[in-house]
Length: 179
Image 1 (tube, rainbow, N blue to C red):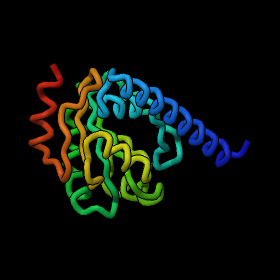
Image 2 (cartoon, helix red, strand yellow; image 1 turned 90 degrees about the vertical axis):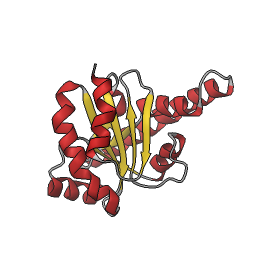
Image 3 (tube, helix red, strand yellow; image 1 turned 135 degrees about the vertical axis):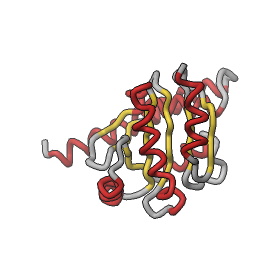
């Protein structure tokens, strides 16, 4: 099977798994067992998106880590401004179980070029309109960028931030979660 067909098949399978996870989460929500944000977190843990090279990245691989999830785009000026702080934060706290992951709302080529230019040291995935919708379910009411979530090791959202996040603010949020 050609490489492009294999990648397409993996992405279609990942979308199917994500849809099943969302359905299970919605069922639990309707039965009063979960909040909408809990459902979205469960969906996120099942989500698989391609990275800029086309390789599938399942978000479940970061379960048990302190996850800093950053929705961004290469064309978004506040996003571009916060990237160096995210790079330094990953370098500083990565060995302590912190994982920054970017969901780029852009083309794979633009994300790949941007990553090389900025020397990004954390995983970047390629998202689309479905991920903007996911960000809304995770608290981003207007669907703006950048949007950052800090999720603790147990999978609970500790903080959400619409707009650029500073290195000092991020560090203050992460330190108590490293204990």
